[in-house]
Length: 282
Ligand code: KIV
Image (cartoon, rainbow, N blue to C red; front, side, top):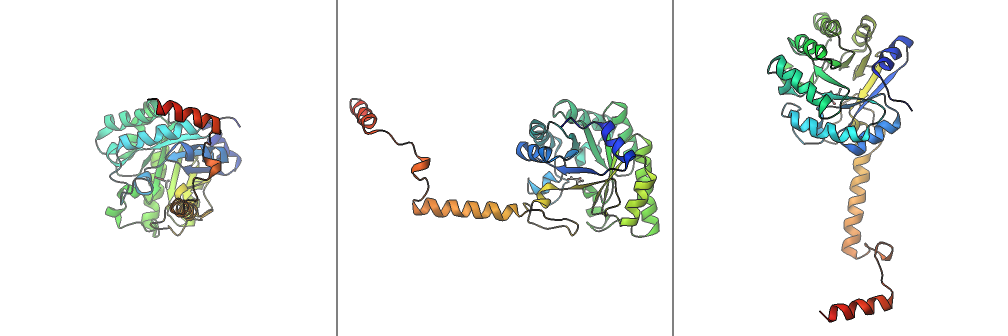
């Protein structure tokens, strides 16, 4: 399969086809989701919660994001790779934002960056795009600021907030974003945003009306167990598989059943005798 390009992503919207994006945080997961055929792989700052064990995405640093993005890059050879700009990289002016985005591209080999809506973000997005780095926007529920905005519930349920979110998406499109994540808004609003934007939308918890869908892979495979968002469909129960495998290992080591002869290097009697003689002569 050939590499996915920005033009392919734009073209998919034009042709009415569906797009897929999944998160990855390390080499094996990047490789697996890439081989599965997703169009985009996102090194999301959800990494903070599902891999690093933080309570929110706010503490995730740029260095942590880059460390993981580099590993994902080694596994992704076909999909577009998007790095998620962490909280602080978007709060210290446009120079820091551009430098941070550039590190995703230069050091980690990302094809694009994603940034969450906050007041003034259009200016940062424009500065990054002007520096030649493609930007994906993110509106609706924006986890980096969720706690100061009343938690992780659905956004855009009343006309005023729906209009605000639509305006944010249009503003990010206006400055040149190539795609938009639309998180946790009602289906009707997601459809409206998708119809009004020329760039593709990726829904998460926003119904089937977007041009594409995105999920946190650890939710989809059942590896993150702390909570399960209502909109997640679990396609596997990997936490259970890992727990069962580790439990069986512990049981077998305690019982002396592992390692067995098939995992052990046995020596021929004459080789053993020779080794004993050599060791004895020391
Ligand atoms: O950080 C992340 O994984 C995300 C996706 C949920 C879109 O932003």
